[in-house]
Length: 265
Image (tube, rainbow, N blue to C red; front, side):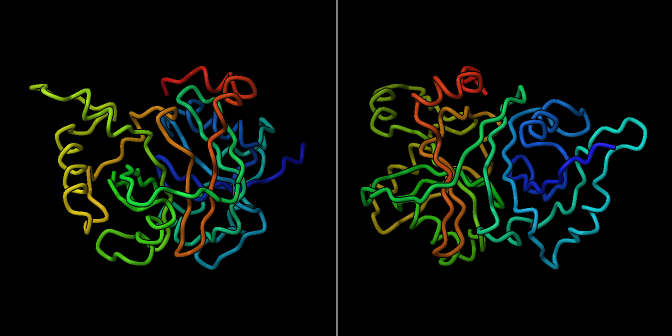
């Protein structure tokens, strides 16, 4: 029997779960997105976790022992769910490996961790999409470091001890210019009320003491294209941050063209 290596994957979208698998990341992404009707149809985001990671919250050894090839077909075990509740809070950031973005057609883009060294303009209004464990769309004058710290340490009513979020590539000046004088306004962010977007931005501008403003309680990740996400993805716990940058346009058009050309998902 073929000895398939075992992997630990933490799915962060559309659910948050820790899963054992004998599939390599590209095959796991393809399987989860399109390979099984009982799972899910659409984009998926997951991160590989160090196979040596152990935590009393998860019975990892037990489920890894069950992650074995099928006795009849000899095919690798595709998924063995370990936990599907409160997962991100119990996985430390230092065991995270590559992050993978899976489009609806199952094509996978790997992202490497990189130190976040950007110097950000203070007070600039940004729109963040929280991915796990929260799913709120938020306008904020905080930069990515400050926003992550705020969500994980400074707010109990709208926060979490650990957060994964991304930034929407949204040109606020262009939004107001394109909708100037219109009776019915529009917004490039799918599945949100454009009037709510306008109201939240205007309030952040009028009241600099307000640092965040909730735009929507629901996630736009299902509808939005990966191409509308800016910079990358941030895992934050207090002052600890793990950043996964998106490739440059040049890299997407050359090295990752097969993934990039399906830009609608």
